Length: 57
Image 1 (cartoon, rainbow, N blue to C red):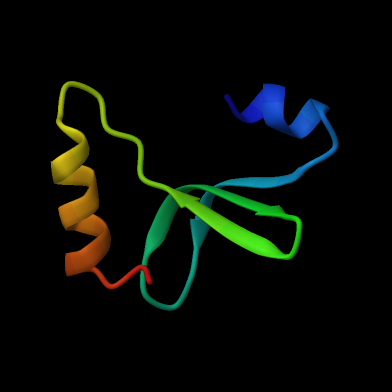
Image 2: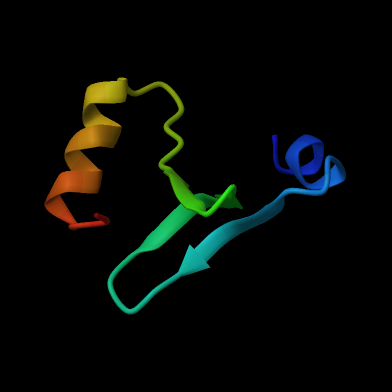
């Protein structure tokens, strides 16, 4: 996923560390920031819960 997005010229970072969390994928596009928490063999609900619990936003 990273390679495809990066090759299109979009600013993308993998394993982006902030003062609070480590995001799996961060995309900076069109004056917006998109955070992705990627889970394998887990539900989207679990990913959303992690985002809320760790206060990504």
